[in-house]
Image (cartoon, rainbow, N blue to C red; front, side, top):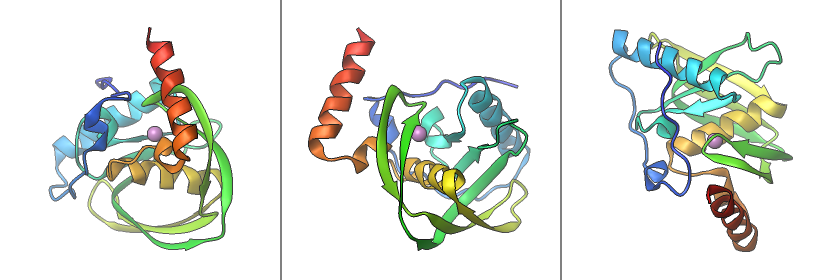
Amino acid sequence: MTLLNILTLPDKRLKTVAKPVEKFDAELKKFIKDMFATMYDAPGIGLAATQVDVHKQVVVIDVSEDKDQPLCLINPKIVEKEGQQIHEEGCLSVPNIYAKVKRASSIVVEAQDESGNAISIEADELLAVCIQHELDHLKGIVFLDHLSTIKRKMALKKLAKEDD
Ligand code: NI
């Protein structure tokens, strides 16, 4: 198992749009293992491949308290969205910055598992937030992009200060 290096803002590579996974091979399975290890080590509740500079549509998630419900989504697509919720989000790529973001309250996601089997997941509450947040990463979007210009600038200033 290898811990992967997590990119942080303002690294431009976080803006890369991920490509679909086509090969479900041993290399992919190893990468997924490394992603889970990296996420649990951080610690975080979700990690997108984009954040470790691999631009493929892979995300790993575990929002459970005991960290025993790993969920890996490959080539995920949100096919249904309903309602609204506001949750304070953070991100391993935006250390120590938290902000309230408006998201759909419940979603249906279609994806593939690590063997390429089709899966469909209904999610609400924190899991829905986390999935929407991670899928954004695959499109080169970070949660700060959902904030107003002023709030985003304030957050980026704070981030720059903490880097000093
Ligand atoms: Ni994130």
